[in-house]
Image 1 (cartoon, each protein chain N blue to C red):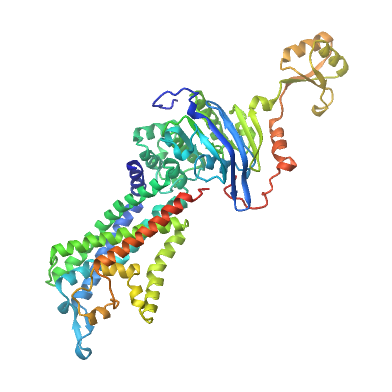
Image 2: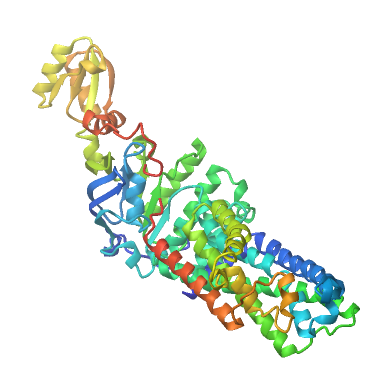
Length: 325
Length: 279
């Protein structure tokens, strides 16, 4: 499986930098995006996360020139989207899965878009091959399943062989098999050095795919960093019936160790990711080990803490804020 | 820009609507020309001295007969042109393809420009279908009545060209309407209701007002009729019975009036398209 790229671009192309600066959008009294600033590094996959109604789609649409910001700017390679000389060749975007005329075939849908940038039909066909719907694409889009719509949307985003991809909830409505396919597909695109900004309301959906995360709630930034930073330092959980002896042995070996009552009785948290070393220390101390595993931060819990804390709770959930999620 | 125009043309010609519409245009042309032909050639009107009956086929000049017959379906046809124009933008909102359109053409004024050019091409195709139907349906009747099928070809060609202009103009009015009202059903309903019901009612009301006819002649339907000089050389009394309003613009006055409508609606469309949020 390979994208028939026209040219090989270095992953650190300077024009792949996305900068969102002080971006705001009000719809009447409703503040959808509130002075949001963040940057997306070239050649990395960034997860753009937040609960429904947090302002993700509005932010992406402002970045793409579809929605006019009330304040601030969104720049791609130092330019606004409308200033791009070759829009489809610079940025590929997949927004909603419903953006097709039901009476037009998927292939013709792509050909309509391709015509704007003098992209040949052969490119359309190879992309349909790539996303796995070459035969179905000749039928009318009205009969497509959600998975096929998402695949067609991705093909549309890749038409101009862009080095920046902006995907809005691409796994929405996909079945488990579709989600698995999408993950593999995104990883494949990432290996080509593309800069990918992917929005989701579920951290778990993109956790294995993204390098960086931007988390927003109520249109405001709540966390920005690498996924590793979010995970925190590596740690090990070891369970035993003789906690004090084990704690002493671990501390003697120069490790940070402490009770971890949240994980149940007899649980000890050790400040290392080296499971073998912890096991060896326990053996030498003559302590029985009942459980030994890597202790990862529960990202999903952390995510909910970040986005659901009282000051970030969605004020507008009661209102119908269509199109602002 | 040529890319955007090609894209718009592909949009139109990749759904079934294109041949459905061309077929409708052809049939509308044929049927209305035939009906108008039957009326114009064989119909009688109580317009003679002392309300005696006058056979229309005898009193109408040849050119006027042919014009009336070939343009018999023009009102229905420009409704269809209005529909094509409304759908050009309305479909984009209805099926949310407008996001993709503006992603591929972020400088929106160029997209509107491409839509205008594509619309002119599309409506020309439909106008050809309509004229082919009209010439077939009307020509058969003219021939069977032993009347000239193409009297004064140069003048008739001018009429055909003006019919094309009328269709294009209504298409552009539709385009503006489609931008104005993003709900295409509402846009279609209001567009057709305005031209078929509201406009004639207001025009009728204006006949009771002093100087009202001076205003009514600038209404789009009246201007369209004037453009085709359908009643030239016809006895005013007969013309009035046949539905001509008292005061009419010259053909070029009608054409300019229609172009002004098209320009205003296109500019409204352009302005709205540029500032609208696509959420």
